[in-house]
Length: 357
Image (cartoon, rainbow, N blue to C red; front, side, top):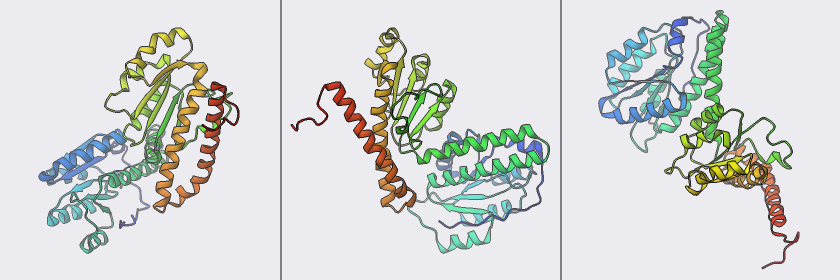
């Protein structure tokens, strides 16, 4: 993938009203009429990932006019889906001259295409052109990564111009976008809702590795996490106290067997009250909180396996970071297996080294 380095100016133009407006409204997509389905798909993915509203244009004049009304320097990254080279050139030339444009992204909807020499000429001609993309997923990740970086820079700009409230808002957004981008590193996810010290007293709390484990302190944080990582391809296990049972009713889905809920209760009365959720397959299991440690270990062991499988795949593809992680995660997995075996022996009464069958 060929990219252009963006040469940003040191002269910063601060227009507070522009920045307030674009806080949650920075997704602008121009598409020719025949590519509306691709534009709708792209806007839906970006909106879900960033919680920003997307605006779609199939009218060139209206698209350009939108950016001419915005005066704050280099903070917008419009996307173009246009197969006609003449129209594409016209749009690139116009956008490149506007002060509000930071980078431009082109999506080529043709399948299995590669960058051509003509594409390289276009990339060299327009420094603001970030890249020409042939895969929606790659474009979405690059666009969101850049949006997070822009939000951080705007936070600094707002601070410099004595607007701490707007600065805080942009800094918060940058953090949330970076957190959402980290979802791409999750092969699977285990979410636990509970107090900060919920793992205190566990023999091996270190099994809950950050490669797949997220602790949520409040139900609101848990719901936000579920929504944030709703589209990961891997398995998702969510452990909730019975006081947060409404989250199960809101987010359980028969059509998504990879998302499993586990409900722990602090009395047998609540176990009996909610066991219907397990019987009706809405919830994977309902159990007493005293069994949380053992139950969590079994699920953690699965996620360590998913993590190793993903790291092995990445390592085989040449990912050096994944290769480096295989050893420590592999050691955790081996220790987890020994821990699971010890639990099985204690529950079954088998000797430490059971006789072979």
